[in-house]
Length: 183
Image (tube, rainbow, N blue to C red; front, side, top):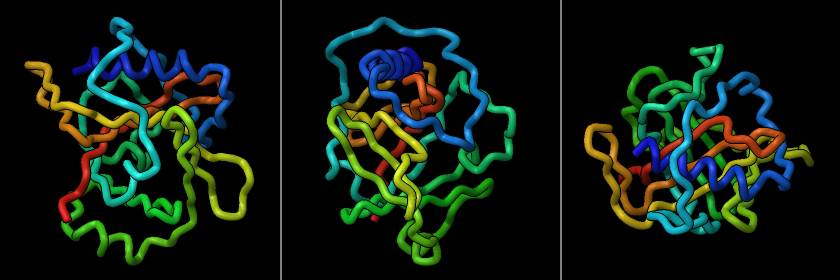
């Protein structure tokens, strides 16, 4: 599984180096990839389209070589949920403890202060309301077939999202694996 994720990161980064995305300001220090997998042209994923994101998503944890200085940063918490609306709004909630409420209930109290748009090639550009510049740029891939690597403990399921945060130079900074939340 790790090779598969690294393969996505390397391919996505290589394709988007010229894109010049904006680096997320709350993720200043990350290690580079410690190893890469083989680059394959065909795989069990495709680029995200706007309609792929609609709905509520939960973080699926997996082992990553990325390590940040601030281990208490919310984006590293083990329990995270996200909501992408058809109107272009995005909401998220992060917790050290399991989030027991349904995502719709959680997001009723979360303000809508971020927007997103999906660009060609599955780039998800996130902006803060009232700002022209992007605060995050993600490469989004949809898993098209179930995939499991023995011994890793995490499997990719059809419909899952693999989102890779890009830095200002097009380098992969962070990987997020999301699964559609039960309705």
